[in-house]
Length: 516
Image (cartoon, rainbow, N blue to C red; front, side, top):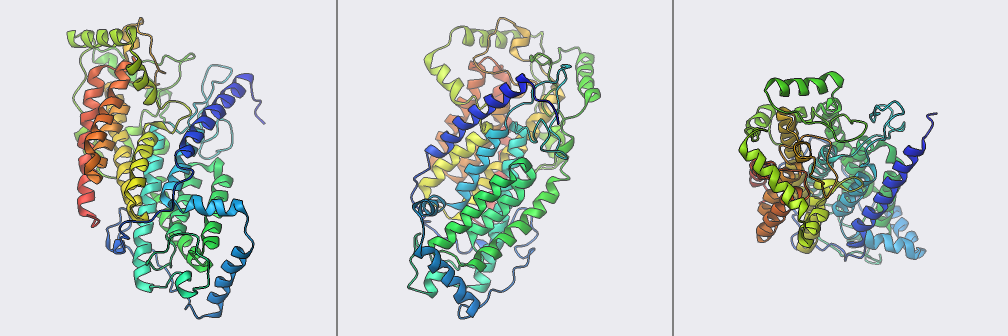
């Protein structure tokens, strides 16, 4: 067994402290939400276009048993038995999950990202270990859920849930089996009733897809993930919303659809995105050959750059040529007057901070132990979607579009960062003392800005009434990096523009998926 050093323990404790604070923030805002009552049921969602599945019948779902079948009656009696002797804790779980399956699993995922967003501590010889997906429980535990990894994870889970729900709504319409409370009026119903057929269960579909994807993305947390899924399914039984066969069919469908996404994930080149020592040195050599100053790590000992080959990962909305087409032109030359001016601007901001700018820096920091910038935008979106009372399938669609946009934004951003390999302000002017941590990758373009431009654009399309608010938030997130001393203005302005251009592909998908 690997000996755990004092430094490793300190890092682990720091991560646990940060995780506990972030987790509390995730749930404090939404712990006592009312049950989801969609303003529009979206009963026709079975006709919407899935994103990875070829059709909504790619995964077969067998016909359910009839409601007068003795086995079905036994399943009704299972609900009655659960309702005859339940605890306050079980009732609180019903209330918790009734706020919405997609919302709750998105929160769980943000929790996992925050927990695993902790860079490994160095070895005794000054080198850094890398998490290994083939040995995920060894130190450092896989994954290190940094922003690119998190963006990819959020996208896969959300898109799998959406495709699985489209298929589920299709089979709901085909089989049209009534909810148990519509079959037996003596059942106590602890959640709002709706007119949707209950087979297969949409909650079970969401949970099945989430569990299948999360066990791939966060293998060290499988016990916790399975526990939450079990609680979710028990809550559906106790509430009177579903019989056992509704849940079993839904979970099987969700898992089967997620397996198709998992197969894609295993071949999307993310596994090779860390690179190796030779590729890291080549980045330096190419930059020097251009006559420019290469970026270098400010960490001691020097840490390898974060996922330098992430720009080669297979995207959802564009192809590899599209990534290159969206790569912006070069940053200002290091010796240019413009770069000198921008560096001085950064110095002036950190030398003369204001209360408001410090607030902005901290609000958008999204560093170690948090659910990352993509997770922050998921939280922003969720807070607004809660108020809109949208259906489960529309929740899934909206989060899929948001997260596919941010995942692809990460790919374009990281392609740009490691194509130009541009130094950060602290490298050009050591007098700049940042107000937040210095990320371990090149400056141009700003990741926060690219994520935010993409997120604000697709969210503005999905919720036009909030479009200006999202735009203002994106601008603030972008400038927070200049105020904090870790980016030049051009990093942020071009990052925003790039994110907006990328999001146009998500907007086009939204216009053609049949949901509008």
